[in-house]
Length: 235
Image (cartoon, rainbow, N blue to C red; front, side, top):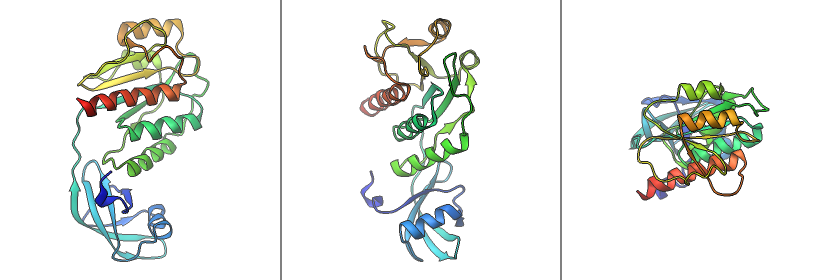
């Protein structure tokens, strides 16, 4: 965490122009929660404009109007981290999106597998969770959450320029080792992958093991994000 911003609220704002109006919900947050007044500062960010120190210039009943003062950071991308996972119940999906966002995941791919019990998800709800996690963790970018897709369709059209690894429990394969390129993990839903899915993944991706224990989907996603992030930060 950057000490100079520790007590300054951070908001995802798109775009950050010389003078801009904060959304109604964010305005209430700044005024009612953080008790900011005219002349107070906050941080606004997005991947295109970077991170800016801003000043409130007016407050009405519903909206805050602010101006940007100085850019404090720009957005620079190193290796990208992708998490593809079998859809699980919403509360546990929230944990995946929130914690993996904090750990630096750049894109999420919800998958429909043979054992998937939940197929319809509220993308806008989880995108809002990703924004909140980015604000809290001092990221400049916000990860993308894609629409659900069938696992075979996803595997046949894997995003290019990515090393794809499948978390196949007790596969006998090596535990994850550092990759300096863009890396993506594919994790199953409750019940894991079917035999047919395991064969498909073994052909199209690099199978890895996350250890001897069987992990829940949300635990496996967070573990994969941790492994990738720790390797990046220590490389």
